[in-house]
Length: 113
Image (cartoon, rainbow, N blue to C red; front, side, top):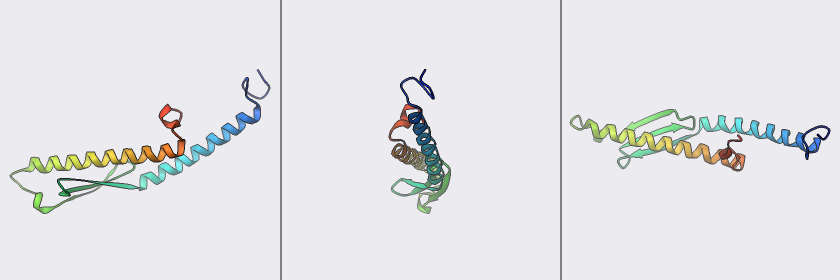
């Protein structure tokens, strides 16, 4: 084995690679903290139910227009809330994936980060 590292790698190259990996890790941690503060919004029923979800996938807010509250049709309201929450969670996943892909250049999908 070559001195200072792996066969075929100079010691300096592996040190640069390690520094780049550490820098990327710090950038990822910063981005994750920022994404936890960001929110996405989704609605169902033409805006009858609107929800806000954080990048951490925490439900932050639910707004329900009074005209969709019908005691004789609770199931419809439940369906609208469920649809809006699921759409907001999907948007939060997309936001996180998109921002991470920008940072990692696609390496995240290979299980490297």
